[in-house]
Each structure stands twice: as structure tokens, then as C-alpha cells.
Amino acid sequence: MSTQPSASAQPSAAPAAEIGVIGGSGFYSFLDDVEEVRVDTPYGPPSDPVTVGELAGRRVAFVPRHGRDHRFPPHKIPYRANLWALRSLGVRQVLAPSAVGSLTPDLGVGTLAVPDQLVDRTSGREQTYYDEGAAIHVSFADPYCPAGRRTAVESARAAGWDLADRGTLVVIEGPRFSTRAESQWFASQGWTLIGMTGHPEAVLARELALCYTSLCLVTDLDAGIEEGEGVTMEEVFRVFGENIGRLRDLVGDVIRALPAERDCPCPNTLDGMKLPLELP
Ligand SMILES: [Zn+2]
Image 1: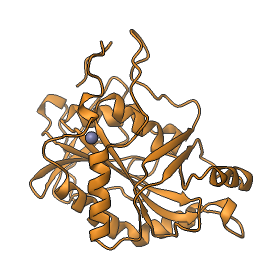
Image 2: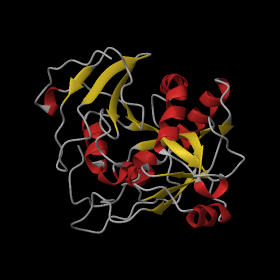
Image 3: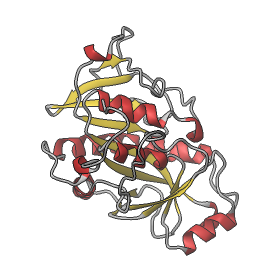
Image 4: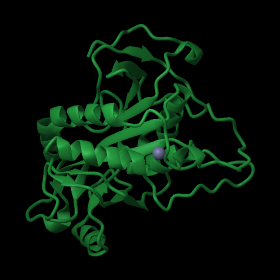
């Protein structure tokens, strides 16, 4: 990481990027040769200055979801600012690696899961850009970009990951972990993954007509299916640390393979809607 301390004050002077990466716990930097960009948004600053660099000819913007020093717990992350900042730099496709728990013994520690559904169990988080004016109701039946998911699954398979090519991610409010009863309830619904940051990130991306793909690294078995004390933060960071190199490589593989031209439904999300604000 050779982030420059100097920063551009004007977003208009910012270098353009086409692909955005939002790094989760333990994933605080991505590319080596980067330019740091300070972007302000109507929702305040993002978690940290965005770093922009190049990988395989693609312009990539990176923001660490929790801040580089992990100062934002899941319920305090400036989700709206992060997505807005990425879009304002030109980003249209977002990859979102994160650490998750497994709700089923089928998905062991070290598994890479590419969820196709989510269940929102958060509360009180800002989860829309459209607070005022005409009601904007985006489609969210399929919360993730189909093209991004396909690319992620193919890349993870080619790289030899233990892979779950679909799954339902339950997003809890946190910052505490679940009780055993909660975990058993979630698991009994057939939901397979549990995390704290996948929402509202996914819906905010959708509201900005961005492609959004979640890459979930299983770092623990959740309380309901694990004997003993249940998950600890120490365990999460240990497993993440062991896998961060592979995960970083995988994100690079996915970036190389993402389509240059989007042919998924995501760009058309807001077609025909009279937006109360101008998108960056
Ligand atoms: Zn898409």
C-alpha cells in the first residue's frame, strides 16, 4: 500500500473509475499503486478517502467499509456516502467482499459464498436515497447483479475455492452476535449466511442503478450450530487474516472478468422514475 498523503479536494479533479470494491473486516487496502481521493457527498464523507488505481486495464476505486482503522462498527458505517462516492467517481459495478458466519454445517470455515438473496434484520439504518419527493420504489426481488454473481462464481470455481454458488444472507443489526435461538430460527428458515453489513449496502447500490455483487468469506459457524461459546471477533479476524491473500486475488480475478459493457438489468433500475435528486 503506497497511498499518497496528498489528496484532491475537488471531486471534479478525481480520476475516473469503473469498478468499485468495498472491503470488509480485515480488507483495508487493495491496489498498491493508488491515488487517494477525498470525495464529499450530500451524506457526508465515505468511511475513508477512496483510493483509485488500475488492475488489468480496469480503473478500480476502493473504500474500506469500516475505515482503515476499523473505526466504524456495522451500524455506524456511512453506507449512503460510500456508494454515492463510488458512483460519483464513475463506478457502475461494485464488488463487496465481507466476512460472514455460516448458518449450516454444509458451509464450513473458508468457504466462499456468492449469495443470491438477503433477509434484512437490521433496524434504524438509513436505507434509501429517496426520502423526499415522489416515492421511488426500486425492484429488489433479486438483490444482486446476475452478471456480477455469474462472474464471481466462475472466478471462484476456477481458483479452486470451496464454493457456495448461491445462498441467503441474513443481515442482523449487530454489533452483537446472534443468540442461539436467533441463529436456530434463521437456520430453520433455510437461510445459510449471516452478517452485519450486507444491508443497506445492497439496496443503496440498487437505488443508484449500480451492479452489486457480494463475496462472502465464511469465517465462523454461527452460535446456533456451533458448540461452545459461539463466535468471537478474534476468530473472525484470524480466519479472515488466513484467507485475505486468496480473497484479494479472487477480487482481482473477478475484476478482470467483469463485462466492460453492462448487459444486466441493473442500469435500467430507475427507468421511467421521476427522481427527486440528480445522480452523480
Ligand atoms: Zn448488473
